[in-house]
Image (cartoon, rainbow, N blue to C red; front, top):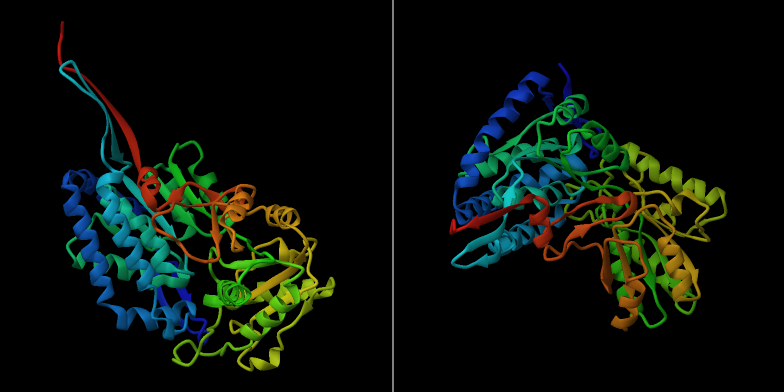
Length: 461
């Protein structure tokens, strides 16, 4: 029997483990979920919406358990209180727009014809969720999928093994039928086999580029709809008219919060030459104020990365950049908790360029590179010099300038004077190797449903 384990970054112990389901048991479970879908979809929309919101409320009642569990599983300090703010914001927003997003498009309603386009649920939706924001990323799809009349199978990351179990428990306790929302413990081989058999009608995956490729290969020929949010190397651009202190505070937080393990975290920053020296100096001071340590300690502001191998990737990229001429500005002696394992000090690099892996490949850790630029044109070329495209953060007092630059950037979201935030009213989407499709907003509902046309002739003459 294969055991799926969560190795805690806190102390390297096995924090939780569950047996992986056999392929036969998994097929049976998915069969039950499929059987439950039609009756779930026949329920009034408002009933489905309210049951989902009750599930969200039930999970909120588990705060005292959820927050330390997250610290043990993936290292986020307890002082930040879990993910409930974003979790609730996203759930409540999609609930508020569900009726409009799923409403029929009326083309004609006359004495002769009724013509309309309706939104119909896909059927069974598979959600493969990541460990970095395990509740918020999962709810992005789970809430609108259930509201739209789909049933959901959740496969969560091994690193956050207990999250899917807890979410399913909360929703079932709130009244969502057992087979409408199932959390399954699946290994990669079984997951791929189920996908290849066409057992799902839509798949949403958040994770690595290689993981996305594996899902596309497994689904090839099944014509299953797929939504992917994959890698990122999100840039920030600080223009000469930017609010310097606000830019430093927001971009450094965006680069290092959650130990840099954010899909839309800032990984590279381009600063106009007139502000460059001051920006770098203030950024190093800002980052140096972190307290790295045990995430269960309320005084800790920076916890370990979720696994020591993730931290090693950061160390390797930084070391390679330094070997090729970069300069690391944060004194590691300020962070005695850095143990060479999962606990890693934050870092700011200068003298970087795009020949370095550090500025091209996803780092996904608390380290950021800063480059000096002379113009919008230079900054735009550098921001686009990436195989990824999730978000870009522009810092200026001029919205028209930001809009003009934004139209030139190959990215899914353009921010002005903020970063590292998911607005549930806007579609969350990426370009290039960051993925395809989109979640949340009205368009998120459209991705989780399919159009069906009705052409009804009322007279026979």
